[in-house]
Amino acid sequence: MRTYDLSTAVWEKSSRSTASGNNCIEVALNLPGIVALRDNENPDTPPMIVTLAVWDAFVGGAKDGEFDL
Image (tube, rainbow, N blue to C red; front, side):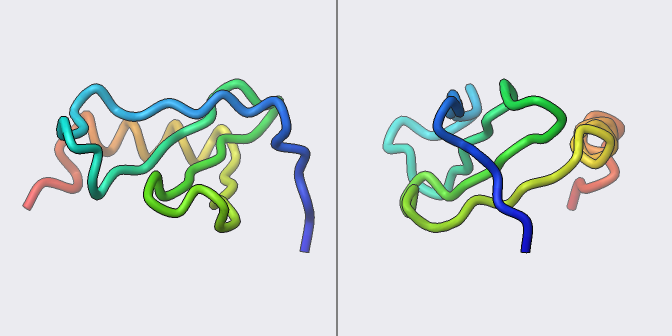
C-alpha cells in the first residue's frame, strides 16, 4: 500500500454542509497529483486518496446530475 505525506493537507468542507457539520466529507485539493477525502467526524482515520483525473470525473458527473436520485 502506498503512503502519502498529508502533513500539508488543507482540509475544506463543502459550502453545502449543514451548520452542525454532520455527515460531511472534507477534501484536500492542495496536494501534488492527488486529492484526499476524509470523514469530518473521524478525521484520524486514513483518508481516501484519488488521482486528479478521478476527482475531475467525479466532479464532472456530479455537475451533470449523474448521481442525482
